Image (cartoon, rainbow, N blue to C red):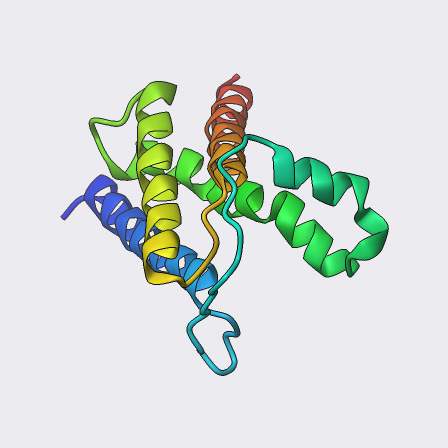
Length: 149
């Protein structure tokens, strides 16, 4: 087995572990106790940016860590998709492929949260996921371009 194959296998394993932890952070309440979240009677959000704007306007009403995770959590969590998807999957070459993968994963998470009551469906999470994977994809491209020149 050559180095390229070993590297591809290692990156595929890292991608699988990343997807596992992505699911954990979206469906588990606390890593220490691994208790599944359960939401009943909450309002879901299908209006783009409405909950994000509320969090930004009412920053003083939230603990800093809660506020930070709501505003930046999905952005940070999805940066690796933009980096790892093109490396892991040979057919993923351009940004549109990364966008489709991001939308598939993020919308799936939101629908599972809605159906299972293990989270809150929020369109803002999908938008922030796209922002995160876009940062990852173009950040990796810039890094590779700068490294090669």
